[in-house]
Length: 76
Image (tube, rainbow, N blue to C red):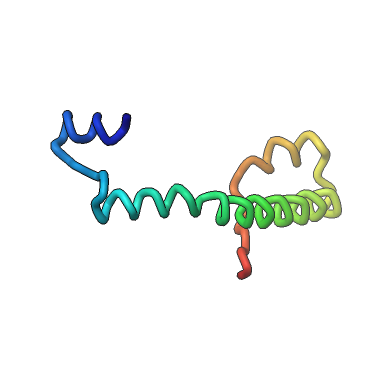
């Protein structure tokens, strides 16, 4: 379906090409990196929330200020 759209619209043929294989490998590898990123963000976020409580921030202030992406560290 996506291949036919790209072929008709842009003239790009991804079936049995390098770019088709690269796209398939990227999509197949996404679950491997997403799990690590989720775990790193969850771990870092809980540490930052705990630090905010220790520093005297209220739960409401912590909730509204904790939506920014923390500096997550992903270790191999």
